[in-house]
Length: 119
Image 1 (cartoon, rainbow, N blue to C red):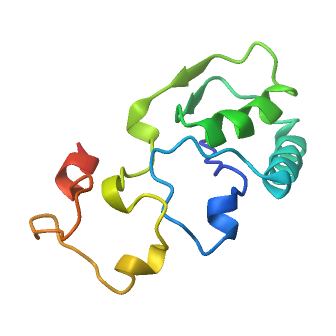
Image 2 (cartoon, rainbow, N blue to C red):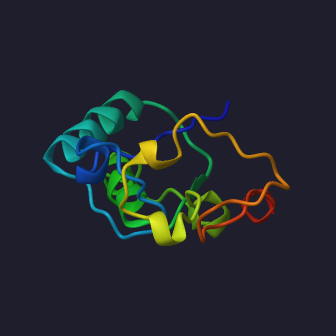
């Protein structure tokens, strides 16, 4: 069985769904509460290994989970990071709402390309 866990809420998520990308955005109070709730829900699951994004918000979420899973092997992997939004990091997500770019389209912002993200 594979479990996927998303990090808890950040102020960027709560304030207009800002594009957070690779920024070191911490969990907010609600996000820590969500992380604790998730940790409690997973406390009786026997995990063999954990793979985690190295971003701050994911590490903070993982720290709550590890309170119930001491000694669990954790591997931080850059490939699990969110897309790097480059120059539009911190901007409202609707800056690119309703626009779906194909892999070879020219994107009007300096940001991680779709093929690079897939790599």
